[in-house]
Length: 250
Image 1 (cartoon, one colour):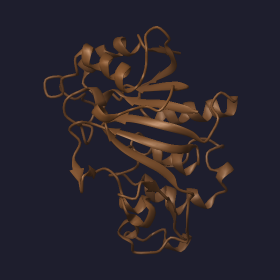
Image 2 (cartoon, rainbow, N blue to C red):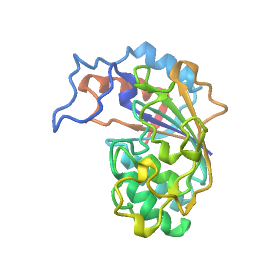
Image 3 (spheres, helix red, strand yellow):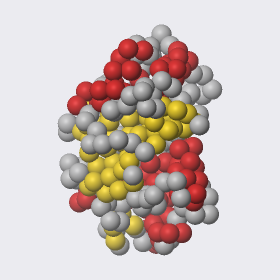
Image 4 (cartoon, rainbow, N blue to C red):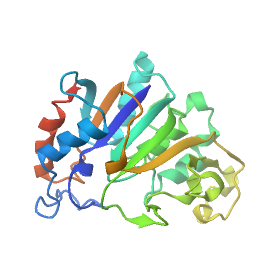
């Protein structure tokens, strides 16, 4: 199965790195795309059509997509592992927050089938829910469609942590989550290679692509849209009407 995972912050100018308390980003500083540009992206790059709407879900914060996936898996609606096309101004693979540490020193010690069945793993949030889904082995492959204004490092989006990749090489094209020994849990140098992993998770291919170059290999089974109010201006919400022409939100 293949899912389209969209964050509304992709469709506005400028990237909000850190939320500003309870205040929404300024519509002046982060104006949304035109309705025509969004429609063209959904049709040309995502292969959607208004003639046959894709079944989808709308959530407020992106970590709620993780909850939807768990519910759909339990209900037999979503079969894992599945392919994820992630259209977002952020990778949501834990760069800049401690979620990866919990995943790699705690969660990965549990049996794969037990990692996400009891409920939300500890430390799950908007910035790392996709990493946790990878740790649960739900994700077969990941396509990260990065924002046109994303910060780049070595020709790749800068919000990708090398510790998560095969041989710590961000250019490898493979996420291989490291599992660190329990006794290394309190070390603060794990992301810099201060300790060797006792093992690594099965590889998950990751493709990094600009939106202007996105080509989807086939139809999607579901779409998910996160409003992410801490990262999007209020004006951007007008674009939900455009998306609703292509996605039948539950």
